[in-house]
Length: 315
Image (cartoon, rainbow, N blue to C red; front, side, top):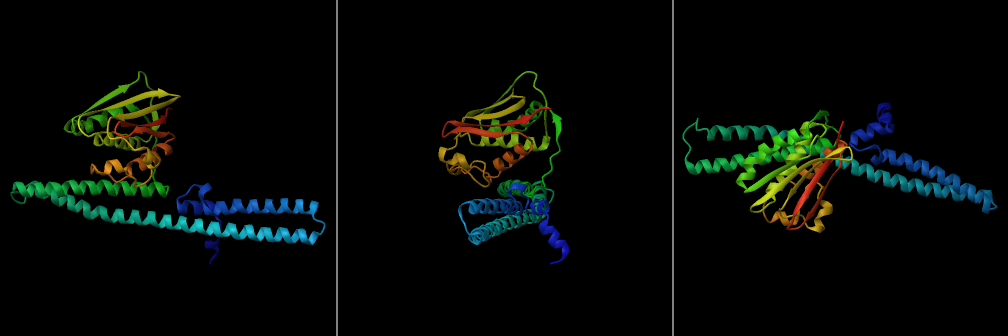
């Protein structure tokens, strides 16, 4: 091992960046803290031993054995954590590489389908057009999944940039509602917006917060079965803006609620409706809101509906 590799191993911050972990979760940092604990334990043991044990050599032996045991345990635990961190890093890199590699052929497929549907290469029969539309819908779904996987990979590796600016949350939400209006009308769902007066602007990344709000609204519409209503509220609370989306949809069973922000998790009661989704949207939303300095949460009751909310700091 050359000198550069040795210095890289000793550089805790470099190792944490490599694994994409905060410093308090980094194996090397944990090993350092445990080393301090071992030294403190040895000193305390020696101090107590000299007080209650007459033979100095016995005290030294006790301290030596205890220190060796603690060091071996610490080393074993740290190596295990380092193995898990490395496996997680490799997994994130694999997802990132595969997702990037899939984007080009998927774009080509999407372009080819759109070209065929345009009838520029010849007339398309009605039945053929139906199958091409199915292909187009599925390429769109695959594109959304790849985009989500890339976002998750960048979040886990700490490589997702946030470009924070001051903007009007209510203006952004109005744009989002306008985009979702056709889907809501086709699903027989009414969207209501309630905005408090004289709201301050928020300070965050506009595109990332738009992604979160779109996820909330999209879920609310898709998880209402039959006629329904989605209520969106924006209000000021404790020097922050509170955004919430309430629906009267299928809700989330109590036993599933603890897992709702985990990757790839989808509640059992929505699977039977075959509603499309990857189980990544809420994980991404939680990461983006927390990185923006806000909080996220929800309350839900099965067959009654759900309310998802997040807060953002104002400038």
